[in-house]
Image (tube, rainbow, N blue to C red; front, side):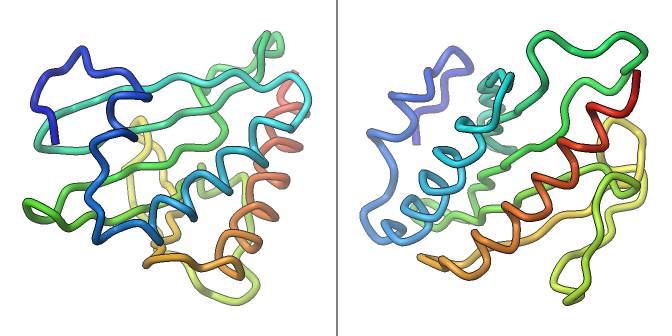
Length: 144
């Protein structure tokens, strides 16, 4: 992976390790569906050696909403050619009826987060996380 912090999302995706193609497929499927949600804006934050984050928020953000995003996908390098994908939300914005996620105390802008880790091409987990994204989006829209 390129170590430069000015890396674009397109450059990041182009240098994705071949051995992690299934994980890339999951990320792109999730991204496509989240971007299809009405009024959603996207940003990419590369933090070389730490994570590469796709972040989604309402565009424009509703009046009264202080939280800077409603969903995030963190790609975390675990080694030279190994990645982990974690889809995260504010803990109070989503449910986890199947208990597939991890509570991350204070881990999302100082608030409790709820993250769901994906391994490879996992359409069922992508679908589960899209349900969480819909919940988070509804909670974000109610903030005003």
